[in-house]
Image (cartoon, helix red, strand yellow):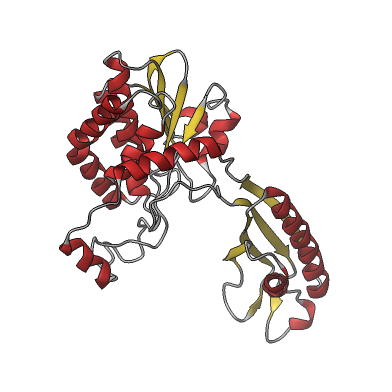
Length: 349
């Protein structure tokens, strides 16, 4: 986690051009915080709270920010677990992103083999337990430099919930909470330490609902129209499309409603789907193809369909000049050192 916190703190424009002494001060700040940051990351791992239910995780980070002199606004953008923590005044205004939500069904102890903390419960599969604490640690390091009079500006930590679901940042953008930023700094856990110039994938999040006619599957099936047939035709069409899309495309879905018992023709069925690509224009093309598939599937099954877009994200806009500066600082910090116990843990995984 240390290198991530340093990357975020040293990546800030208010740290560029300030000399090696300032960077050394930032590094010492991170080292002083290490125990607290690791403790928060471990706690959020154990809380394992899913989208918009991250009550303890959010409050843990918010209280830590307050304890370090930040002014915290809770429940922003109509989201109960979203918050802003700010310190300083004037320009530049630097935003540091922090996520903390878990994923359903991934409960896991801190061991290299499959050992759920609670069978079927949520767990952290994308490292968001590290995301929030590391980002907040970077914000605190910059706050201390503002407080010491070494740099000027405003540092703002964004507690962004529900990134594994509805995307909390979207609602925060809609409320104008990013409008005055000069730069936004973000990272994500990975198996590589690098300054990413590819950005993130754009996506569209939608549901397709099929409606048919219920009937007894044994004595009156000819009067039934299976909504689940429509759903299955749709997924079959979607999977055939995989051969004819760009290598950057990702398609994944979950059947959230369908037949409840085998002897009743199901009158309703629902599919939740995400389509991704590197550019939103390509995602829009995929969505139009999915709309046609939903109509065709409904026609083939003799049912009706409705496709509703729920949410989506544009690809991240990367600042190449800034990424070069980040790269230079990562080179300065060097690789993460791992001891033999950590290497053995990795080999066991």
